[in-house]
Image (cartoon, rainbow, N blue to C red; front, side):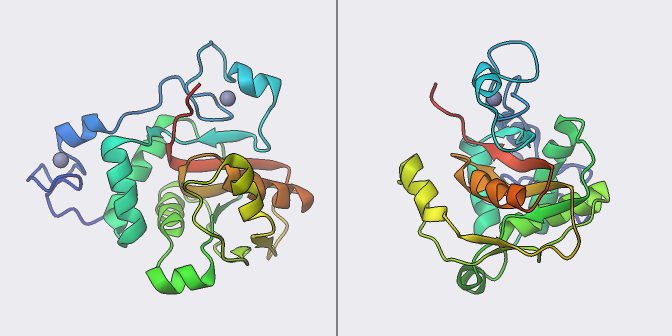
Length: 221
Ligand SMILES: [Zn+2]
Ligand SMILES: [Zn+2]
């Protein structure tokens, strides 16, 4: 990868082997003791938090190491609005080093609708999945999962409204039958996008689904 010797967070000069200066590195806070299923801080010991033990989510694991706030929030926004491959590579480092990622067959980036893609010119989830694919040597498939309905922005909607907004938004036409996949998104907020995609993939017989993302918005609970 190409490192210009400048911190990707604040632009100060750094050792060329690093992505971020010490200050920016420290401001990328990790979720403490994350639950394996929902990515939220787990108040008890064990892999799953009490909420997920009671009602498991429709995926097997969620890996989203950074807390979606402050510097992380700013950098994830930057990825959304400008194609920045070094930044995607720097942030996926956290995903790779945070956990023992279990092997999956393929990475499926959360797709943008065609109209949104034309407007922006790139899909940040694909950028992230691409960086992961190169680092982990896991194939990337940006074609099988498509967004067939343009949806309104999710922010400001209630959980119910989000689910309605996303109903039938996606289509899955796999080129080969996958059994274990990771869906890759930039940030997990309410989880309704993941839930909608998981329902679709489950109906198509995929047994093992993981949700991989750079950051997790923490729930108030
Ligand atoms: Zn910095
Ligand atoms: Zn949980």
